[in-house]
Image 1 (cartoon, rainbow, N blue to C red):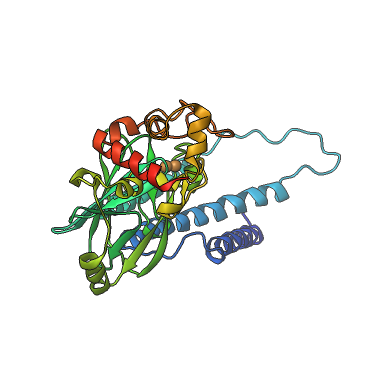
Image 2 (cartoon, helix red, strand yellow):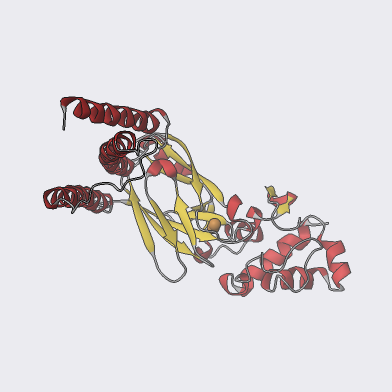
Length: 335
Ligand code: CUA
């Protein structure tokens, strides 16, 4: 190779590397990391990214160089010279990628290992998912529909699902996991920045999937303690919440239904503000209509609403007593 062709190859590599680096750096692909786990995750992403940029620059340079230098001259219909490969070249282009992939694997394995460590005394919050809502249950037995977390403390989120497969994802937290019925999964996070972060379900879980959102709020430890000791919340259903309004909230009804008395404005299912006329249309008493619509949602569908959207799990997920008080609460507060 002449000095001129080496210079050309280098020039192509620099241009390709510069363009790719600009695309990688100038576009904010990743949210600002808000946990220690996200810091490590972003490190592993950038580690692989830099390697990818260098490899791309080299491959693009060789490709462009060959296309430009070895193209057929006009009118040249002859075959190219016969070649028989190049053993040393093949060893090099096998060995280098092997080393790089092993390096990426090692970095990723260390990050996954470190990110899984909850430490001695994590705050354990149960994340209970169901179509189409999140409930967050704290060690004091209270549940909330917004996740509040203290800064700089290890938090273990234990994920479960009452119906189908959902997921728990906060982009800025860098960790994500499915919530699968019948098995328990968990993730560990250590928030490092106060603020508000969206919680997003990323498993297609039904018609309301796109609306299955919540919010995570990271507070300073002192502010978290104040909230934790004074906040009013619904006790977890398991702890015996039998009051109708509490069940309405903890069973997630408001995520899909509008019901003025409970202050919910869900739009996936029909409004619950005018149940009397719906019961009359179905030829049932108000109580029977409400009860059967909860335990057997497809038994009498409101016009314009499809079968199979409302979970049919309520007949087992809430107790008979809870069903009775939920029916009573709805009947007393609807028109
Ligand atoms: Cu829950 Cu998608």
